[in-house]
Length: 411
Image (cartoon, rainbow, N blue to C red; front, side, top):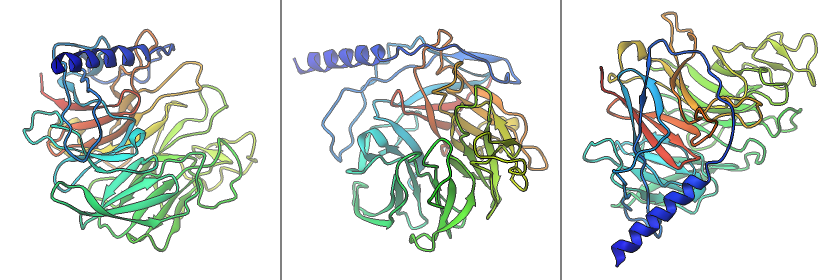
């Protein structure tokens, strides 16, 4: 009887999830990939709702069902479901133990996802910190403590017990400006001497009264000595250090209400104390019609790469593994969350940006597409992207509550 109840509940959950996918839009093509894409059909995972505890909660996988929404990838690449059933998974990081840690914003908790048997799927969902307020980003410090961001603070978790559940939590940064763009992406410098915190603007376009808005802030690891590292960045979400360097790169979301094509979304190589223009100048070359003047773009930094307006670039990561072909080495992968106010929806995919021999960015190329279906239905919105120890990439989807693993199998 219990088995029949679980199966029935799983079916109801699947029907409910499918009924929510009802958005309509028109598909547009971005720059074409350099290789012929192949369609890879993923197998979805269904999770039976259970009471949340600190124990490992296994997922229930319906292996005999397939989605009718394939993801298109370059030839030789495949995609699978790493885990599903999460509530708004956002940024991810790989812990010292090799497991994946995820900020599950919709459940106000941090979960640990291990893959002990190496089959490319999480063994279960383990809650290691809960009772949070919209956690969005997380980063491990060199001593194994975990830093987690909320809209107005950064919390340090330490002293995990034998089950990996953190026993101590301490607010090390408080009083960050809330509201508006409220995600607070965290990233440590390669030597762990500095903590970077992205603080987005309070508005679409305005003159801020708090100088910390539309910046990347820099702190000591204990939360002291907060300073503005770079300014004029409307809403930085993705941050990543280029491998083998101290170059901090970031994705920035441009302003709205200037039409479907302006201003572009931007990828920057961030320089300390530099100005990136917002709100008076966009992409180093577009004077804002509301707040700009003829000289507003003078001295403003220009982006390494531009993406189509409104695609909402969020998580970024440089590929440092050896599983992907040589052409993908040190490429920058960008998760595009997708537009909300473009008349022709754009984004909802992963793009890669090749890095030239001189360190500059090449032309962005589509890598994984299909979360925006050809019939206009949006069934997923990529957020975070992280490289796993085996060289595959993990992508979080906060709309579908799923993590996807992209790996290379060859022809």
